[in-house]
Amino acid sequence: MNVYKADLHIHTILSPCASLEMSPKNIVQRALEQNLDIIGITDHNSTLQCEIVIKEALKEGLKVYPGVEVTTKEEIHCLAYFSSLNDLSEFQTYLDQYMPNIKNDPKLFGYQVVVDENENIVYEEDKLLISALQIGIDKVEQLVHELNGIFIPAHVNKSKNSLISQLGFVPSTLKADAFEITKQTDNQSFISQNRLKSDTVILRNSDAHMLEQIGENVTFLSMESVEFSEFSLALNSLSGRKVILQ
Amino acid sequence: MNVKEIAEQLNLKVVSGSSGLSNEITGGYTSDLMSDVIAHADHGNIWITLQTHKNVMAIASLKDLSAVIIVNNQQPEDDMVSQSNEEGIPVLVTNESTFAINGKIFNLINIA
Image 1 (cartoon, each protein chain N blue to C red):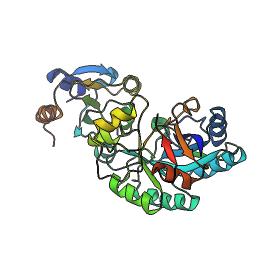
Image 2: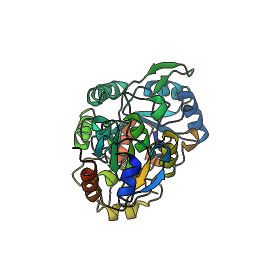
Image 3: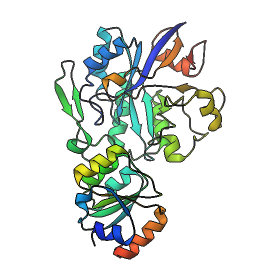
Image 4: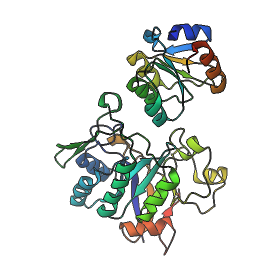
């Protein structure tokens, strides 16, 4: 079993609130500088920048879990990851279906562009990506799991756009594969304050919107390899794989 | 009725965006969900909320709202204040609850 260092919550230039420096090339470079083995690409309500990040990362032997940070109808942010580009693009069709038709205003919210490996703009997203989808958190969880994806409510103890800010509590019926928390909290207090099962899996990630934030907060995974299937096992503490608690 | 008059009559504290105090109020909208305000608020509405982050101002600008009132004596975050000043959309604070301030403003402006 090896220990892999992962930052699974990183925004790219596509997210309107992320810096224009967050190109695939720069993200990969910064991840290597931070000695990350795995990164998760999670833009707001869009998966369109993932593929190019994967291509760039492949050149350097860096593993990418492609994903998205969904904003549910309740305005809760949830991370979702998929094992293949096929599953990812299927999920993208749901995003397209449930995104309201609200146009972005780059001056107010920021630019939403997809760039290639040379940082040329190949697509500009018109719809405001920080809008809430027209479906609630349970439906999002269901769609992610139907595609064999991984569903992780984001920064659940943050003061906005989190399970706790929007619902006031962590629903025991929610089928989350893990919970992401912010760095200010320790695992045990979080689990007991929210009356969760003692074996609840907790992750920490950077939620990087700027290059310098990448790797600021990480999760250590004990797995045989960086393959997505290993990640699934680790989240369920199966076959000796696990998330190393800090 | 404009923002300045409402602020005076209801004793609201003007925190920022004072260049917009003369904004005319067309009605009110109360919501803490950004997506709801984007979908349903009308231009010139005064927005009552407990949210204190800078996206509130971006949305207030997008929807051309007259002002934002924050309830329960919550304080706007620094970046919300600076954007309020930039946009010229006032941020007002009240220590009343959403329910109470809604009632008072509704009666004052008498617009459904």
